[in-house]
Image: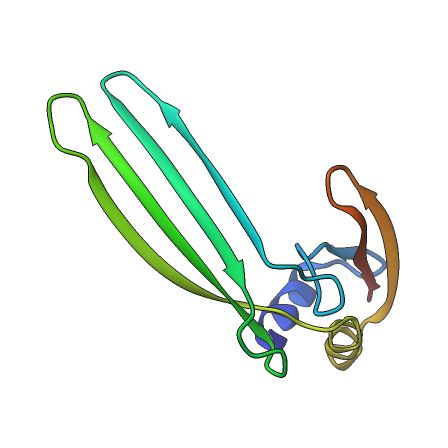
Length: 124
């Protein structure tokens, strides 16, 4: 994460702002499932998403993704992927931003369908 933040700083102009809006933090994460899909011309796709945290002490969650892809006249294909995604505390976000040479603050926004969620505003 520190590497990514250093590159954001390079691209930010003096006096500019960087807004980071993580999907969740350690304080706000809840296991979730989701699904959806789309039908196109001669082909269709469906997905199932499952996000969970097996180890509350580390800084990551696991996301299982299952895709079902179907082309007209062909059998459906099922694909499975497992993703490891970062899950950082609010304090970690602020510390990393400050270590990258930015002044940083946490703000809260009301995100439709999610509720109160933290965002981080940083400046050079």
